[in-house]
Image 1 (cartoon, helix red, strand yellow):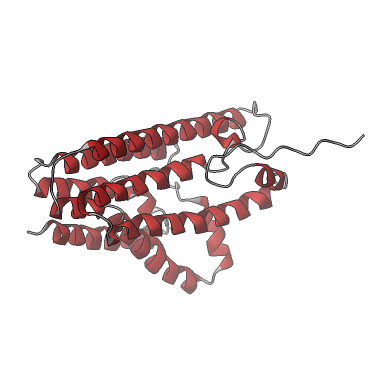
Image 2 (cartoon, helix red, strand yellow; image 1 turned 90 degrees about the horizontal axis):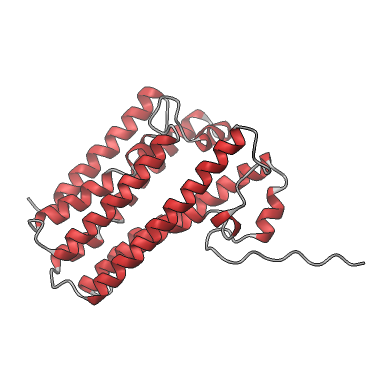
Length: 265
């Protein structure tokens, strides 16, 4: 069976499954729970369709598997797979919407749209499958860049994890993380997450030239833009001093912070 058709069957199954689980449990983070797993399955299908004999597809599969392992570990240690591990933002949104409005949002955005993005971001592997060729210098360069972004996200998540443990123990000097990579970006983990999938899109370009499969990375970035704004609106409501952090530090792309103007004597 065609690999893309198999992926479409998986997409239909996980979309229906996550929606049904949200309705049955009244928890709405089921897509979050499969977020780090389903893309690995899609890459396995594409690489498997080539008999795991195409070096480019095998490297893409290996890199996405490493991405999935790291993200699954980080999500699990934060309690994401435990009962009651729902994303706090959905509770905020439910308060702002009528019940029927939220259920429409749940089906079309949380379940359908987000699962569609999870499929779309892996389609550069389909382009690589349809245009198999030798593994070249550009493939090596792209793989190294992916690995660098993977390390960056690992560091950012670890810094955030350590900060929250210190905060819960009453030893943190601030109410939100502002040190390490968070001194250069308010959301460095968001940056590295998106960057990795843009790198996967570049693999497709290396294999087949400029083509439409970059749409997945583009839609993922747009999703993060909306998610970042929503998250920051909640954070600002909790911590008024976050406004100063917003003025000083880049939102997503790591960049040297703005210096505070010198006080006049």
